[in-house]
Image (cartoon, rainbow, N blue to C red; front, side):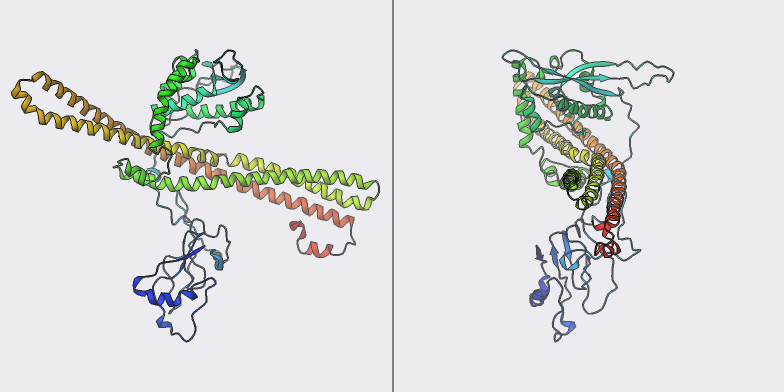
Length: 561
């Protein structure tokens, strides 16, 4: 997994002679070669895992930007690892790792928004580093509760499969006096199905382009299969209602979506929402007509690369002329790639912790049953099995609790991971606005050129009516182009503020989550160590004459059980 770095052209021959010595571990050249003949050009190999150049000329395993000089000794410098250095290979410098830093030396210089470890990461743009929160957002509504799922089974040819509907209750943002014991009356209570929430998201994206909306609960494949059958569990509906409650409260608190008329209509219209939105109409014919026209627009967005990898190439191809947006796209593209590859691994690690707790508990139960079966014939043999069974049960319960705590603590990471898709959509909105701006300006310029070519001839021929119509069309197309440019600027401004808002939220939530994760794992490890140490003490009491027990205790065997 290691590739040689391209040498300097002037040192091609000496580098070729030294290629056989540039390996791990580093071996110096034969003694008969004088030191002054060694090339002074940068030599090294690329560490495929670390993602940066690894110079082994000093034998210290340092990740530096300049190679060490072989003629004169240098002072040992602090290792500068890259983003992934040492993650897979530890601290073994012969395997591409990074040597541990000396005690008391701080190798990190984190800034406000990103760590100093990411020396290959582009600097954060001004939209993130200089983000200043706007005035506190005043939502139109208070708390939104989605509950009371109801299974609807229609009849008829076009009734469709059974589906769940949910009661969406909206409360006022003004709290009742403390001396009033009656519950707060709701402002509105309507019934909606999951299809209506999907339509709400589509309309919000069209209403506020460039905004990064909260992630909507997904319709998982297993749930789709379950919905297509008549046997649907109430647990499924209750879980989805909880997810929709979180989603709706996030929309109400969103600075752009919370003020949209689409959200207000969704929360307050007492009639079926299909009367206002034909794509979710109760009539199958109306719904198919609306979906057919919307499908063409969705296909166009897909062809334009709506969810392609975010970067400067896509923005430049769309005609991006803002240096701030280009820098933002480059930075966010790298960050989204890192988040998309890291958060699933974190979720998998938490899943493994839960699975370990389940297996420990199951093994402890089986061990306890076996101890009971053996106790009636051999009590001495059953005694250690009971001790081991109790330790496994307690360790399994503690490990499962740790899995639950970590699952709740990584929620901000999962939300940011799901938000990446919506951030890509926001940048796609910017590209779409630039495309409309370019098309409108092209049409306006064409009309203006046509008017200039035919203006003199029409005046000489007396076709003043046709000339007036052409002037009106040219002015109309120029106004449309100006409006498209204004809309593109609004999308750019909204996109920059949204990326800054998400970045500030990410820093605040991730810091607190990391503290919870670290404290939870530290506490769980200490308790698990105490559990197995107590099991070891129980073994000592049961078998004081067991050979090797003293050596196990002396070597700290309790922590290695």
